[in-house]
Length: 242
Image (cartoon, rainbow, N blue to C red; front, side, top):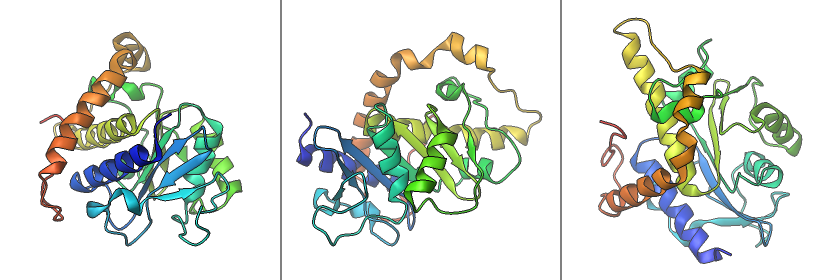
């Protein structure tokens, strides 16, 4: 079993990397689940200094959203995390982000399709949660769960994204790939019609085979970069595939 301290450290590191990359700021939150104790560790919510999170800042809650200390409240959209943790064995880590580019696909009437080989991990699509509200109750969490199904990610209408994975490394890498593909789609559209990968092409490439190893390599890389970051907004960001 991964220890509580290790999970806290990984969660704090992951969130600082997201802050460095400019995909989490005033809003957004990340969690990791310890199934042996049925405990989710979640980052503080809006207004918290995510660029400087430390392991001690992480909030342990149960799957009903109750904080272990009885007073340190989790983000208001905690059901996003607890619903996925409780329902899917492959959702040991979850991120809810208001990413600048991927969120545009939750606003425009345009389906997301992968345009890079890395993006083919989303070959089965990224469904859209159409309800115009925050996911602040278990009932709304269940509705979100029905929409995401067994997909890796979800778009939330006019809101942001949700990404689930077996580890924080997977969630980090998948979130950055989704944002990068959304950005490249917009950039390519300025040149002409966008050529995306079909579902069959995604299956043929089968990016899933090596995803865990590549996610861990990405984690090592971004962790090293973040350790040297000055923690100032707008600095330190590294292009995923320059």
